[in-house]
Length: 177
Image 1 (cartoon, rainbow, N blue to C red):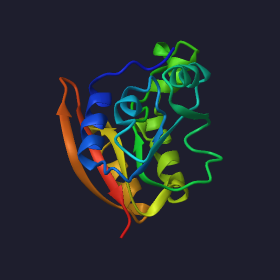
Image 2: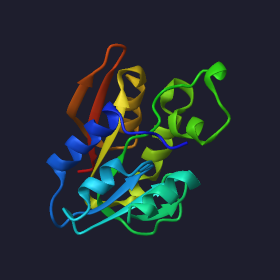
Image 3: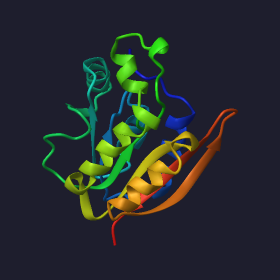
Image 4: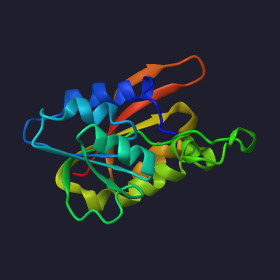
């Protein structure tokens, strides 16, 4: 009942490794299996993970990662220099719902941007003044995801792409000037 690492996880890791600085304080939102955080641990000042799923939180703890079980970053009072998120970005059709935590891990809501919107709305609260965020999105979210970023006054740049047979994935770097 935990989202298993896939192409999007690898894309986030690649983008994070290119962006990461040794003095970064990092939060990975919705860390799931811990695939990314586990590989960044020790390469930055500190890393905190969050996940809404109790199963993911247990797995993250088992891997020795600091974790807060929460929705996005609700209740987190610290600001981070690097914020990472591989959100659920597809709209899960009703007939594919299983009624368990995996639905939460993969269902991005209408047009796949409901969870992305919630993340972007919380970004000012968790991203430091000169901080950066890396968000994974899909071509299925276009142009909505870029409009949502613009509407909140953020700047963005696509820093990675991965083509799949039915969509293209983007690693989007987000910041404020």
